[in-house]
Figure (tube, rainbow, N blue to C red):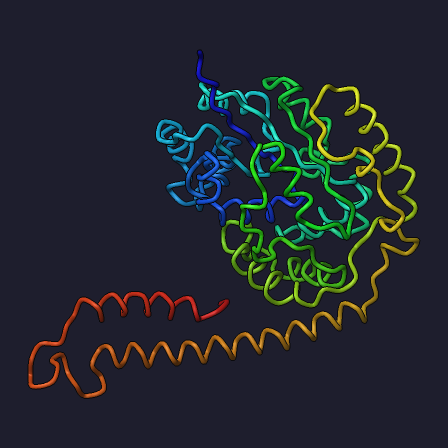
Length: 394
């Protein structure tokens, strides 16, 4: 009797379809996955993103040296992993070209490759994609982005290479048969996040109830006023921090967007009513093509139809007062965070001072005996690292 071929599920997004939540669950559930004969491939979380960057030729001089060897490490991991099911999850893989996909599948030779695609209705995807691009250092207005998306203008090229569902499926379908492409629809707004996880786990043939579902919220969209404020900051930066992976990601996204602006919440950007006919027409085209494409559909294609709540007559309008209120609240939060950082820095300085014997004890312990050095040296190194991190944005 022949042994069943090991399977590799490649979850390619689409971006903004619950990918961060799903990845958080999987990486916090490694033991539970292992118990069900499932492992992550590559085995390091950072390697999933770095694999996508190297595969797509997006690495730059400022990227970590290790990123330039991600595909080599992936090949090494395929020889070490013993699970019958492996999972790769990175939404940056969605825009891969057929030639790039062929390179990846060549590394995964020996696995029965399946592609897992999570999809959400355009009514939610388009506004979410705009604010996400603002967090990636772009500076075009919501209206400019909307018009570019509808016209498929160059400004929206990155949106469509990531979000044109049928195009993404066609590119991956050049190498993976339709019956091994699993399309999981995102439940409507207000649904339990567990429902999306259960659908994905159904594809992976694993028990979702055994996984750790309490994960930190991440990649949550900004409110409209908060995104508009960040857009204006991006303009004001000029040539400073020009790339998300060269400084801006740490300061603009992680600090200003995630820590300062996101907690404000605020009304979310939604689609203007003027674009409802376009949005609904394209959605119907996709639903028809999906129903006839031979794909494994998990969920309900009706969930890809935008809901009434996705549209508003004055959706593109934003007042100066809204932006001003967001800016004032942001400055107050920056002061609060800076105060916490300075207090932590002072505590760390005191810890370092005491461990270095600056309190008068000197390098020796009681009675002149040598003080143990191994523990303090480790603590000192860690305290030094924490001290540097506590300095906040500069």
